[in-house]
Amino acid sequence: MLTGLLLFSCKEAVEPDLKNKSITIYAPADKDSISSSPVTFWWEKLEGATKYRLQIVKPNFDKIQQFIADTNVAGDKFVKQLGPGPYQWRIMAYNSNSQTAFQVRSFKMDSTLNLSNTKVILKTPADKVETNIKVQTFSWEEIANATHYKIEFENAVIGSGVVLSDSKIVKGSTAIQYTWPGAGKYKWRVTAVNDNTNTESKSEWRQFYLLLDAPTALKTKKDSIVHADSCKWVRPLTAVSDTLYFSKQSSFSTIDAKVAIPASTESFWLADTIILPRKNTWYWKVRSFDALNNKSMLSNAAKFYMK
Image (cartoon, rainbow, N blue to C red; front, side, top):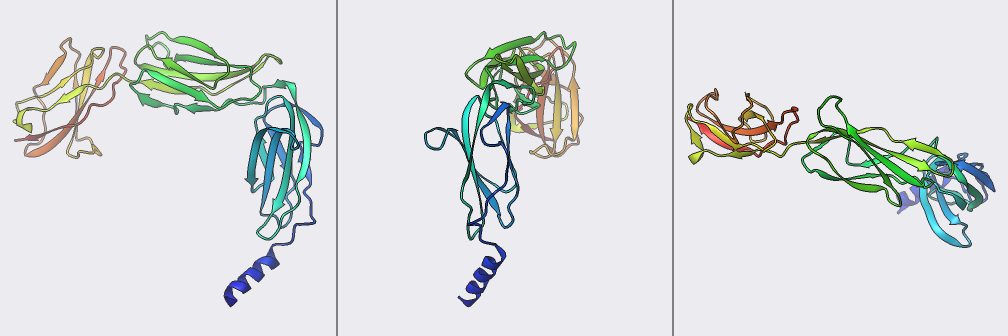
């Protein structure tokens, strides 16, 4: 108990009483009119404070229609996207022993907000994601002062042979489902548009890889083959060639051998000459390629013992 009391006394001595102190606020100033978003809330750090509690509401604290933010901030800035209309915000500083009173400021977001300093943040799917699912949901963070969004889809590889140049207009949402035409490397981006100011803001391009369906790897009878026997698999309909991968580990942490199989019109393929060390258990997978060299997902692993 004595040790606890000593520690508590030391803490009180280190952290000063904040009850009669106030925060110097830089922005937004009281009754300010702001014409661009996001808004940076900025204040001077108060000596002895460990954090600040910041709240933003619309239109004011006496008649709250929307609670925009209620957050604890360690630094001296907080950034938030806001749409047109009246707002109030308040801030207080605190430590483990005491806190200041809330200081309140009012401001207004202009109805003619400019998007030139706004950045559209893409959410899903992640950059360079690989999948064989054609229908995907694309989403982004909301820009409060945008009247609509334009999402663009294009080829990521010029001269790939797959023609794609498409765009969609999205209103009242920050997501859209899109069906890709076929395997390939594509890119997408989102533009936020404000019709009131004729301004817009584009996101960065993000890559999206649509792969072919995975081939089906088939086991041989008894899971045991001699050197002259073959592995067997089913190639996807749109594929024209395959590559086989062999490993001694089921995890495929290392690839011990790789065999490229030339193009053929046959739907079932037999590899007659697979040169692998004998008296070993081998795991193998297959990846197929189409005429434009777009790859497939890897097949599931199959296993055999080389006599």
